[in-house]
Image 1 (cartoon, rainbow, N blue to C red):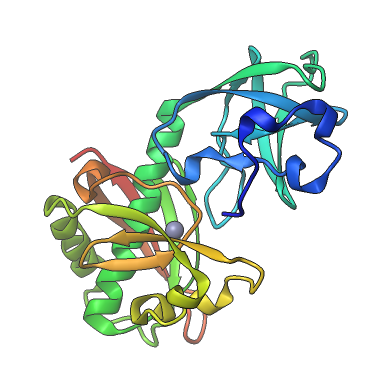
Image 2 (tube, protein in one colour):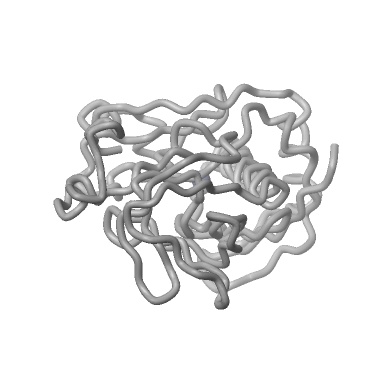
Length: 256
Ligand SMILES: [Zn+2]
């Protein structure tokens, strides 16, 4: 995450400078932050940009948060450059630039996404450890997800086998740590090389690393739970052949 001026030195009057316009992404350091105060730094027809936010904007396969901002429903959250835009429900009056607003995250939805996102990392780790096969893509909704892997063909009995392996890691209650590494250090890390740290743009000086200790380590900007036990369990609902070297796993996250 880029360096920023301390919040106290910012105001709407200085918001014209790009550096100050960047939205501080509070969820990167605290995924458990459910409400926060922020200052409106810009607005459009139906959206406001804030100086800081706990709302996750759609990206990296994880959908945006919902919740309320100054009492109005947040229906979409998008990142545009360094700023996060919060789209409010059609009828809502937008708060003025310079005003302080309270944001509240829909915690049930967010926590379900954190469990789901973490489950996908466990799946990646398990598949790498067992078959040395990399992931090619994925997407998630609260408590359901799909992920594609470079298998050709899928191993015999694959669905039940990965369900068993993933659930064993969830029961094990592995710790999940978030750290921030200088780019020069991250690109030398074998686990991070394996999970394609090289795809992080050169302009990023500090890389956020999500480490399911002993299982899976990735450069990642998403939100995750603190231990694998908090995920619950997974159920593999389907495996699909999406072509040569591309096999899809669909799963659901259920209570443990
Ligand atoms: Zn991730």
